[in-house]
Length: 303
Image 1 (cartoon, rainbow, N blue to C red):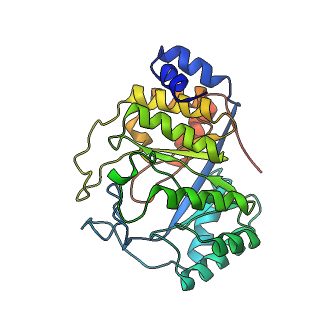
Image 2: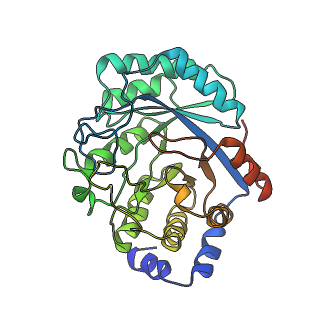
């Protein structure tokens, strides 16, 4: 579908829209989780982010954690039904010293039976993408965050195309791509549809959906109710229709949806959950998500 067709669908009857998106659903739900392996002091000025050095937020800052801490977190996640585990670091791009250590993390994660390795370490150059693939990284995460037409309103220290090019490198070297967005940052309905189409160009295996959680002392600290629950559902449905083979995944900010609407989404357009806490915000306990999966009579994906 083109942009005008998707816009027309976006504004159609919600129940009919969700009925269409549900046609592309399986009965599976996949869990993933992460470890915040390096926190804070990021040089970029993304307006939503607690880890930017441009803002004086109250998050805990620390350098790269140890390999032992990463493996411990991964094994704990596995016990909670997680099959994909991501090493996440703050910063625009990985520096040489940290990159070598992250490669060690990936090597160790790949030894854990029942866990697939993921990483979210910023903008990559071609050599870094090639080396990650050689080390057997299964999936790389890098969000476009918002549409190209709106990106300069969100960040000025790098551009949308930098992110998009990293996503293309991930695919070029045979890794799976996890690439999504943050909703509710002041984007228009039209720009939400643009995001759906931009994602369809690179066909990510996973599309994480975040909803803005305003962080105190960031430029978006007073951004409340920029997107309501109905429009979140409409956006999810459009994303699924435009990307029928991708797994839409609940991530940060899903607590802004009622339990009822979270369950509705899991029945009509969402097939993945990042369970546990996120980088700087609180999520649901894994056991709560397991109970929801059981309640909805879904299959929890296992390796």
